[in-house]
Length: 84
Image (cartoon, rainbow, N blue to C red; front, side, top):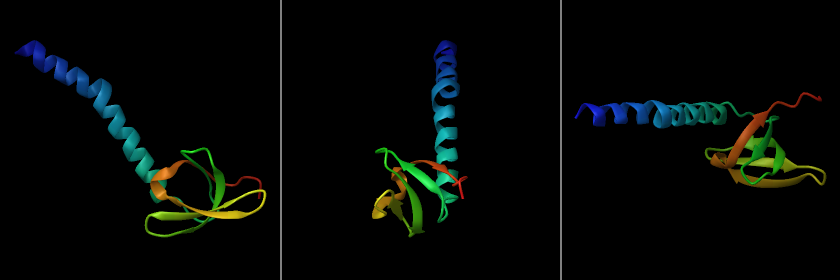
């Protein structure tokens, strides 16, 4: 019985715990998004946040300033615009 419990504990600390931390970090990142931030979606689309609704974000995509709506959960990373 002890080896089985040891395997479960190792499994938790090596696989489950890091994934939970990564999920929490990602949730905090999504909650901190504000208009003006530059984001990259999971599909590789980069744009600037124009507005935020409950679960939808309106992005402006250069160079033609296209506006698209993406689901909040599709945001992979956020970077503030350092150039301006």
